Length: 193
Image 1 (cartoon, rainbow, N blue to C red):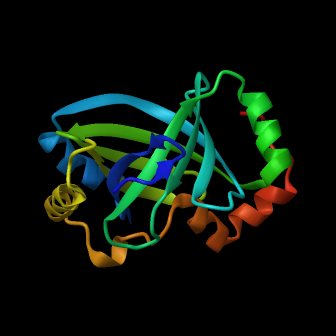
Image 2 (image 1 turned 90 degrees about the vertical axis):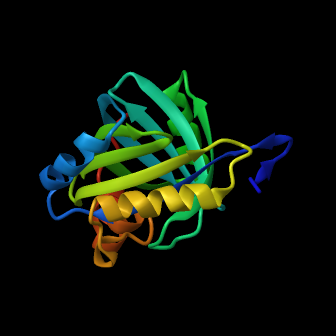
């Protein structure tokens, strides 16, 4: 059941993240099975110190900015995620407001290749200071049982030869904090979105 925020239900997906030994090798497995390919994106995510879930301001290709809140368990296996995405017309104002109210947790800069396999988004990410990753997101329609998404992710994981040791427990922000990169960022001047 999706989380209810007031009278507005959230959207849902089932996701899995894995570190890649070779993005190029994984790409060669993804391309033949992908039903379509979307344009590549340069994404900069500014994470805030949210009291519940994760809250980030995402700028895509320096053109589109979105405020994204999501809540999901931290697990290395596939997990169901509830999320809300809002388009932002004043990114500098929103970032200043949220920084003042919540504080910045971390900044994640990545290049993302996006492939589709039916309702599953396949992301091949190159994350600055962290490396290369695969993210699978099975987008669920409101009436879809999350078990369907978990099965889709499991099938793709097998097709793409993703091993248990490659699975990521949390998100990129958690990896940045664990590596000490997030702490170093907080002491440096913050670039504008």
